Length: 461
Image 1 (cartoon, rainbow, N blue to C red):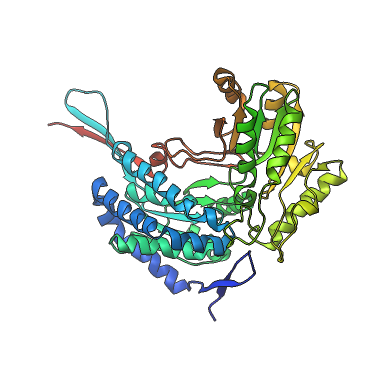
Image 2 (cartoon, rainbow, N blue to C red; image 1 turned 120 degrees about the vertical axis):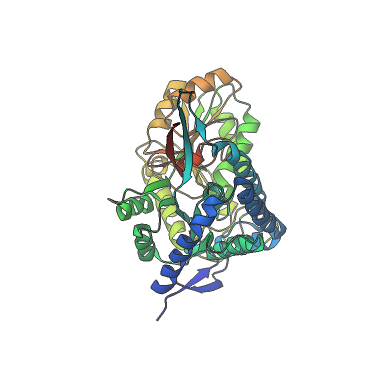
């Protein structure tokens, strides 16, 4: 009997939708469709690919309200913010479409008498995109659009929490009249996904998820010589220097820590503040945190919805409890945020008297929780930021750009921000180091991951 999956709303525990997992025969057919479509698609022009992708993005934008409601129902983002994800899809997709022409051009070499030589970026074949639930459209589009623009076919496997998003992508590309087999999706479980990675028809895997999930991907692909792009966990840090504009820093870092209930790949999970401004920063940060409105994601005034499921909520409670046992101080009390009914609600929390012996400052929380520590100087801040198994982003808050660039050179992360955080600029390469993953998405450099160089060495007779 076919296995079914229920999408459970974290807001009220209701079943949003039920889907049946693909059978072995259905998976085989999808892979066959990809292979059948490859030759024609790779021969298409960049301009033709751009037209299809643009029409698909236009369809998503035209349905932004309905998609926003579905996002909110499936993973619990407050309804007032949910549709804005689709707006951000446009920015990323448009940029990757615009730079494709230049990124995919032949690379000429210096003239050599009697020869013509060039290097041609060549599509890999079929790209398997494994997307997470926390930003179900943005994380997927990071890989889908450049993969298609590079001349690859795409097979999307979405998180069990947000299965409807893969179906909406398929509707968008169908509305754009994309040739059959070029973009497909499949609903499969973890065991089926591991087998899918091993299929000869899959040439590249783009995975966004947990560190454990990334290790599982590498294990499945071991010995197959397939390229993997892995965007994994994070414990992203902020450093507020003595010369920071505090009101700006506080407002941005509260949002960076608590937006999406702290369930953001590059959300702020630890903050280091120069001791000269620490008391004022902490007072303002706690006061602004208390203005969050915790509640059902469907309510118009909710700014902080539920966490994705009860297990995630329990893990956050365990981290906070363990930190308190080691001396951490809480700055939000139960009276500040009465919890709605349900197992997925977690009040935002600010902790001080924390240190790096506590999991709350070293292990990923993926929750609306942040630890704040005073530091004596820049060197101390850099040492603490680098004292992590992760390396996705770090944000610096200061009026001194030269100082921030110098500090950024010393910080071992993929992206250094100044006076902003928790944002992906599509013109910049999105990369992680250490347990935050490997590979590159976004920017013109992403196309180097999604193609292989083919050299042409032509002798004139």
